[in-house]
Image (cartoon, rainbow, N blue to C red; front, side, top):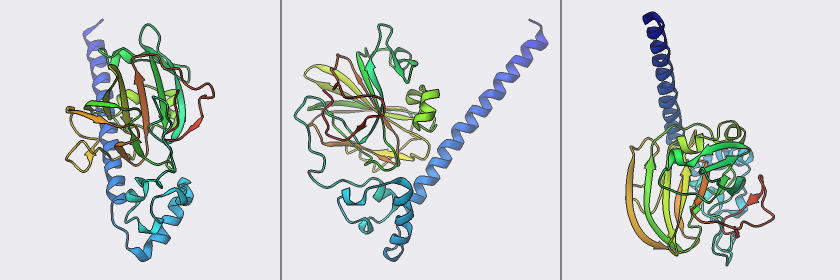
Amino acid sequence: MSKINGIAICAKFSYIGVVVRFIFVLQHALSSAVGFFARIPIPSPLRKMVYAPFIWVTGIHPKEAEKPVLKYSSIDNLFTRSLHANLRPIAPSEWVSPCDGRILDFGPADERQVIHVKDQAISIASFYPKFKVAQYMVIYLSPKDCHQVMMPADGLVQSIQFFPGGLSTVRPSYVVAHPEVLFRNARLNFNLEMNSRQATMIMVGALNVSSVSTPFSKQQRLPLSHPSKEMLVKQEVPKGDRVGTFHLGSTVVLLFEHPIAFKRDFAPGYRIVFGEALT
């Protein structure tokens, strides 16, 4: 290869790197701006005018909310609303769904630690080389869903790891074509232990998801531009207790180190609700 060709190739890769970095910064800036405006308090007299079109566009079910819609002080408060008590009873099975949403895909990992999302292969080993995955499930939370994430089983939250990354959209149509975004986007990993068995629950950041929050952090919100870090928790948490909240929508990924016999009626696209039995 000539010296000139080598310089041209280096310049091309340098240009690509600049473009990728620009997109990364733009995604975070846009998401932060959306989060900022979503948190602005809305005066009571204006709430009906603001919330009515928001509810119509997103498909939120106001009757499921814990409080009357006009009691929420901002779009963010409405989006992260709690639901009526007992609206989502916790199933008696060992594992339950940690959130409302639609199952994007689920199943076993192969011997190479590869999972498939809509027939697209993802190597878990390339992202988490120390974690051996037996089963997985991907749940997409649409804008109408409750965006609180709960403990999927009785057990120990060992630690929470924050992984910085991009904020690409996680709409199902995009994830089908680019499933790697589930592990390249900024994300919060909950490392769990249930009866000496390990599992990881991942809250995946996305475009317009400006931050996440968890009761285990003193920070009210963890911005998704946060640098990589790990928080030791070592706390027993009962099944169904809240462990995190998305401030605007995203996706949850469950990775199990042991086989899970998922319910037979599950299929990609299945509408699942928090507390519903997984097995």
